[in-house]
Each structure stands twice: as structure tokens, then as C-alpha cells.
Length: 72
Image (cartoon, rainbow, N blue to C red; front, side, top):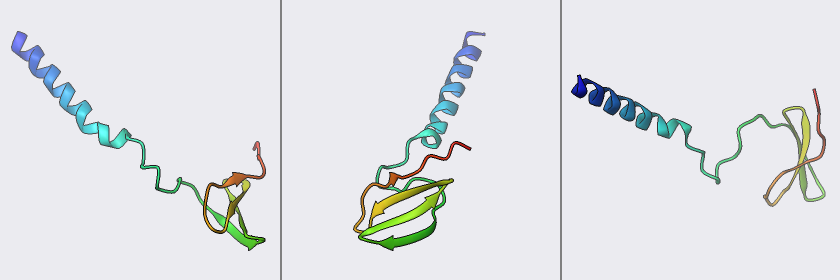
């Protein structure tokens, strides 16, 4: 009986260990998931729609800044 509990514990541990890569955070150099639509460039910036809001990012690259906050 004791060996059965030990075997179950090992199996549970291995299952948990096998799921670890699925729950790991993506690397920081990968773009965020989502959809980016209707890009427009002007004045050194790119403005685009994503998930119901407008965002602005420098054309040279960098972090996007949200311009609107759609509550719906």
C-alpha cells in the first residue's frame, strides 16, 4: 500500500512538471497577443486600433501608449 501512494505521488509530480512549460510567461522580447488594425503613421508616430482602443507608438519603436479606454 505504501509503495502505491509513493508511485501516485511520483506520477502527480511528473504530471505537474510536464505542465510547467505551458504556464511559463512568454519572453519579454515577444510582442503581446492581440490584434492590431488600421495603422496610420504621421508625425513620427504610429496610431492603431487594438481590442477596441486606440494606441500610439513611436515609429522608431518602443512601448505603445493607450489613448482611449473603451469600457464595453
